[in-house]
Length: 338
Image (cartoon, rainbow, N blue to C red; front, side):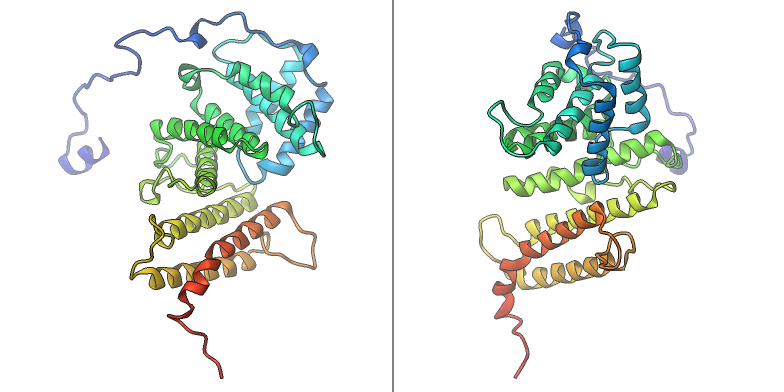
């Protein structure tokens, strides 16, 4: 419509009927009919312990990945204990899933060693899965569903269920693509908190998709050329924006390595040496950028932050991905010396 107005001169487009999803035929899915679901306060951790578990997830995970919107999650958490658990409805069902998932992730982070009772946090994880809705319920609040799918993928990957983790991440990615979150749909309203939320959710999906796809030996689900959404800027916490941008660059480089260097059939074509040297130069440039950022570089003079350690580990992982390329290109670009 914007192009129509700019280049054709038509300010008002003709009335076009919108084809809303699910209008042609009504299918009563289970999540539309279930009314007997309830959450018992006796099965929940105490408020102070729930806050401790939430802060644990914030420290260990949320600094790197966006799993929930604190401005919405925390008031709902306090209301849960102050007013008691409200009846489970289509509108709040996904929040309950997110709540139990945060508790499960935190228990997993705090538990040491193995247990015969199951994976750490499994009691909360199972409650989350019991409430997990069908596709109709997922689209009631798409951003919340994307956050939940990212959390599910991280938990399942941590307990060695990578196939299930990859599937749930794919569900979140399909929701995001169907809502156009890979496009810059916000325009000039980039400072709006909800816009920052959807952008953070998208880029978390992007980073996890790159990581999980490489672990599974699968191609990336979305090409970089199809993405136009910018990195969310945050004037309150610019450090988080810079770390997210670096994380995205490392993820893009990972995809470039897998697509241009490692062939599909394991064979090397004539462009292999050139592609390898190009990627190595980009890796060196990223290393210089990482070391020049005051909040991200490894500095023995100051305490090491968790975000800095994570990004530097990611960078060195990329270096190891290139290691087989060094030997392969050594005969093409031999080392000079006596």
